[in-house]
Length: 523
Image 1 (cartoon, rainbow, N blue to C red):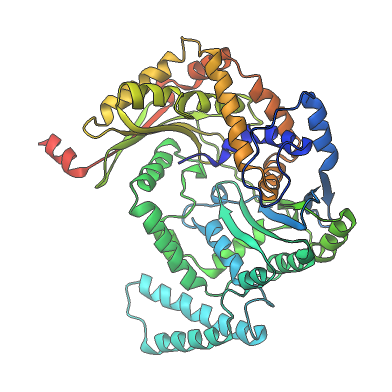
Image 2 (cartoon, one colour):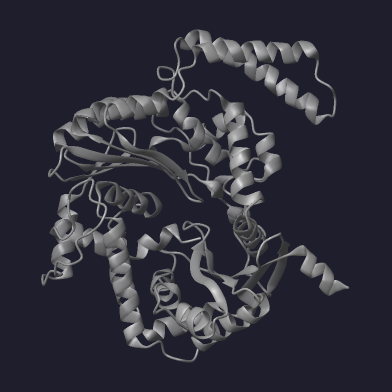
């Protein structure tokens, strides 16, 4: 459960080094050369150089593009970010954002099919029969044999027209690497790295699947997602615990909904659900494209306008999340029974940037508490007292709306949850009155820097960093303020965080226990 959002607190420093040449510019470099000395030039100078290098292009339809040229190798990384995720869903239709990510790899009207006109007619017939079948099954009635036979026949005809994996195969033949996508609470993104000579091909393929998507093999892919949920959540103690934590901490806000969706929602998800969701959110003014690598500026602008400019501009307002979570007014506790070793999650509600800069100080607090063998949690709970086999802090589930600071811990065999919970509580309570040593704060900041040197020393890492900030906060240059705020964190800031947020009324605790132990205790 390591936080995806951790790079928010460290990426600005990484960008500084990228701009000043202290990170290798090779697109395939995965590790930074940490033996080289830091520059004596001022941070402002380095940030200024980066600001001059990143270009923002806004197409005629409102699509934003961030471009940074690095010409040391004839390659580039491209990412497309869409400001839509699990938080944009509603009960009854959960998992649709993630399902849509899966569908995006099935191709378009020109990719993935031998004859789209013929395929479309068959798809329409198949969809009508499938909807009819599922209504019948939901009503508890037996489907007609003719309906089942027609569905089977249509599926066979469609499979003859489909070209499986054509989208990924085209990229592979061009030397593409890292083709992937991910769905989060706040966003969905698609990424690929290619040789520079394939730039126009990339622009055509990506704009084509945005402009002319075809949700083929939907029901087969829906079964894939249901199996993914079973493996990652239903049969996973960590997955069950995390899902219960969100559902306990959030009562109203869609932050409580699982990104992958509830099983009953997934089982009845339809093509029309996905199509409606796509039309509402996949629009130029709700996307950001980031391009990093050996591309000529003139080529970038003209090619993007030629292909991505074909996507129609939005003609309606974006669908916004209107639900707000009320302030928690009392401690909440729940228990998940599962055949696994005990563990627990302890969480507190907190604000997010830019609504409150306290969010940025939490980045240093994580480092002090749980990053590395010198951190408080490891030093006291794992090494000295030997109460925990693992303990970490994180934040979830997203960044657009107030989220949670939480501690995730597994007691050592024979210790049990309660003793470890007490020990964690004591540490968090101590933060309210005792100053964190400056050396620990400095170590946390240094560790953050090293982390991002190791994770963002690539074209893909820089592309992700820029797009993430531009999409969520409207301007990638907020990274500079985030960087300065993080580095200004003091012991008093950490003490104030603990006093403000680690209160009994703001606390949610979810335990995972073996059922047989709970039953024995009840007797």
